[in-house]
Image (cartoon, rainbow, N blue to C red; front, side, top):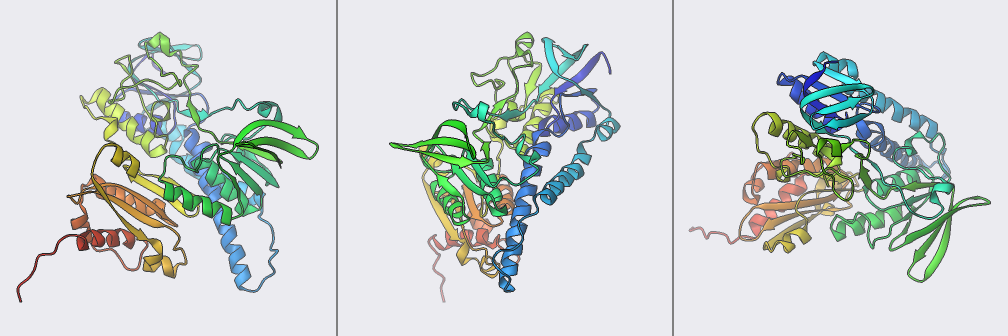
Length: 466
C-alpha cells in the first residue's frame, strides 16, 4: 500500500475492474478498493448465476420433452435443485478466475479490501488508512431496492442477492416486479417445477420494451405455467398457517396469494450512502446516484463515476464501457460522451427479447420520420428447422434514408443476433449495403438479411433496357 496513487478506484465490479486494468496498462499507479467480493454483482449475484439457472431450466425442459418423445410417462423425475445450485457455484468459481486478486496484483494493481470513505477532495480512507490520489473513480454499483410494502420485512423475502443461496426449490414462489430479472427468474423457477405467480404493478412486463415484444413475453410466461398478474399492486404481506401471503389489489378486486417464498425484484439503488461523498465535494442525485456530466465527471473535477452508481442503463457491458470512457477522459485528454454509447441489451427469457438503439416511441417523440421492417421468425428457415420460430425482428429505418435507428429482436437466440445489429449500427452500415452482405445459410441471423432485402424491394427500381 502506498500513501498516494495516481488513480484510486472504489468498487471492483465490472466498471472498477475494467478501469483498473486500462489504467494499469498505461502505467498509472492504481489502487482498487473493494468492500465485499471482487467481480461485483454481475459475477456473484447477477448475470453469471442467473444465466446458469436459466440454462439449467432450459436443459431440464428439453430433457422432459425428449423423454415424452420417447414415450416416457408424463411424470418424469423432478429437477435436481441441489445439483443445479452446485452447477451455479461452479460457474461462479470458473468465471471468478479472471477477477482474482493475484491476477490483478500481477498487473501492478494494488487491491485493498475494506469500506472506502472520502475524507477530503483528494483523500479516501480504507479501514484505518488514509490514501491520497490524483484522480478517483466511484464504481460502487447498486443493490436491490427494498420495499415499503407493509409486513414484507417481517414476513421475509428474497432478492437477487439471496435467491441464489436457496438450497431447495420453493414449491410456491411469488415474484414481485415484472422487470428483466423478475421475468427471467419467474420463468426459470416455473420450468424447474415451482408454482410461480408474478405480480406487476404496470400494464405490461418489461416497461422499457416495445408493446408487441412485451405481449409476446406475457403469452410465453402464461404458456409455461406462470400465473401473471398485471396492473396489480401488492398492498401487504403476512405470515399464514401454511406459508406466506401477499395481499394484492387490481382496481376493486382484492385477493391473497399464498406462497412459500417471495422474490422482490423492483429495481436497484446506487451504493453511495457510506461513501462520504460530501467530504469530496461529490454531489448525488435525489435517488442517491452520483451526479455526473456527459463525460462521467462528478462535481469534483478530479473524481469520476461509472457503471450502475451513475448510469440509467444498469448492465455489465455499459458499466465496463463507461469505465473505460471515464479513464480516458480523466487521463488521456479525451472528451468522449457517455451518451454516444450504443448499448445492446437482452432479457433472457424464452424467447429472448433484445434491443439496440432507439425504441419506436423515442423515435416518434423526436419527430424523426421512420419506417419499420419486420421479419417474423416463422418465415426464417433455420427457425423453422429448429422448431424455434416464436418471435420477430424489427428494424427501424429513418424514412428517406437507409440509416438504421434501432432494432428489436424477439427470438430464441436474440442475445446473439442483437450483437450483429450492434456491429452494423456502430459501423454505420445502412440497409442497402446490409442487403448485399452474405450470411451463412440456414441461420437465425438470416432474419437480418431478409429485413434488409425487404428495404431494398421497397425502393423504386431503376428500369433496365433490354
